[in-house]
Length: 192
Image (cartoon, rainbow, N blue to C red; front, side):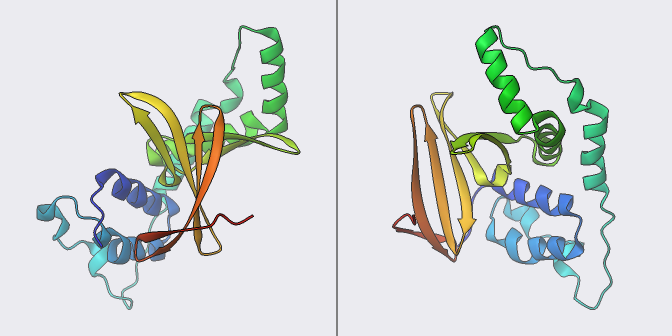
């Protein structure tokens, strides 16, 4: 089954280059990339990574990851300051940021992901231990828009052979579960 989405293919390819593993790159170009059909004229051209055989030594420099991680040092997340015009809200944000190590853990992840992925998504949620901030790989996040305005987000979680989709919309979060076989999804009951 061919996917017809240039954006999804580019995110998957960028992630493969960022990963820095020759095995991941070879897998992307031989297995994943052919699943996408974007522009036939360019898709049929042989490339090194999809034509190389297993007995040919291949090395990836890891330069894309080094570039992305260097951005973190150049931007220095500790210099970023988030201010809110409401004192109570500012105190709440400061507590959430401290609890999640926002400036030392979340911001560096966010910058690196934005560097290779073009953008990144922060997922805000809450459990019995408090507020949680997570950086989501753009491959697993979808923005829902209506007439150019954001109305929600979908996040995909791959777990135990299932795809769990978290739907975030104003005032509610709801879930769906799917079994995925050969890029075809079948809805199943959401596990507890």
